[in-house]
Image (cartoon, rainbow, N blue to C red):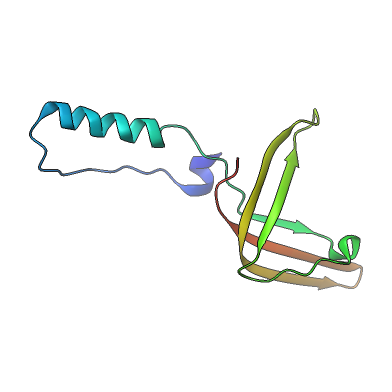
Length: 104
């Protein structure tokens, strides 16, 4: 849920627009460009042993593809890697990539 993951945004806008046509144009621009929710992927965790050639670092871009349960793609985007976390356990290893960007 986008609101749960990223919070709710309320914005007040103070302008010096006095022409109602200009105010309506600004309103239309805001709703056209920001009314629809945007898919985001904050992080991806995986077992790097399964991807032994994985060599990534902060500042790289990672291609991420997610499929839903029926097999169709619902995310297919490149994201900027903003953090890399390794967790090593006796039974294995996980790697988490913190990501930035909007999914398409």
